[in-house]
Length: 317
Ligand SMILES: [Zn+2]
Image (tube, rainbow, N blue to C red; front, side, top):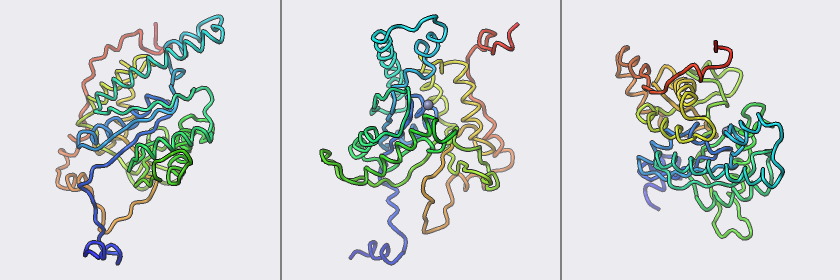
C-alpha cells in the first residue's frame, strides 16, 4: 500500500488531484440557457484546458422565436399541420446554427441537441434514458444544470429539465442493456443560479430558502459571453436584451464582490481536509477599500443603440 493511499484510508489528506483536467457538461432546457447561465464559467474552463460540452434537451424553436413565437401571435390563422411542423424544423436549424456559433466563441466544440419538442416538458423515462446514455458517453466530472425546483418546480421547463438531468445522472451510475459504456459517477452538480435563488451576498440571505452559494468571477470574459449571447438573434437576445440581462443577471451576481459573476447552487455539500479559503478571499483580504470597490464597479461598454423603438410601449410617445 502506498503512503498516499494509506493516508486516505486512515482519514488523512486525500490526493487533491487538482492538476487533473476536468470534464464538464452544461445541460439546459433550451439552447440559450447554457450560455445565459454558465457561459463565462465554461469559457474559464475551456481556456484552462478542461473539456466542456453543452446539451440542449429541446430544440427551443418556440422560445421567443421570431417566427414560431412572435410572428404566429400576430397571425389570424396558423398554418396547417404539415407546414407548421416544417417551419418548426426550419427554425430549429436556425437556432442550432446560432448555438454552434456562440459555442465557438466560448471554445466549445461539442454541442448535443436532444431535439425534444419544447411544447410540453415532462419528466419522461425515454428522455431520461437517452440523456443517461449520453452522460455515460461524455463522462463528465461536473454537471451544470437547472435547479430542479426553479419557479413553481413543476411546470417550469427549467425545473423539469433539472429533474430530468438529476434522474439521468442517477441512472447513469448504473448499467443499461444496449449501452456498452460503464456506469458514471460525477464529482459535483452545480445548479444554475439565475431564476433558482435570490442573490446571496452573505449567510443571512440564506434564511427562508435556497440561495446560490458559489459565485464565479467572469469579469475578465464578460465581453466574450456578451458576444456569444449576441449570436442568439432568432430569439431576440441580441442587442438591448443582451445588454439588460448582462447587467441584471451577471451584474447582480457579481454583487459587492466582482463586476460580473455567475451564481450556482452546489448539489452536494463540500468536504475538505483543511478549511477552504479561496484565491478570491485571499486577494480580497489583501486589498484596500477602494481596490475592492474598483473590482466590482466596472461596467462593460456596450455599443447598443437604445432607441425609442426598443423601449416598452408604455414609455412611447
Ligand atoms: Zn430556457
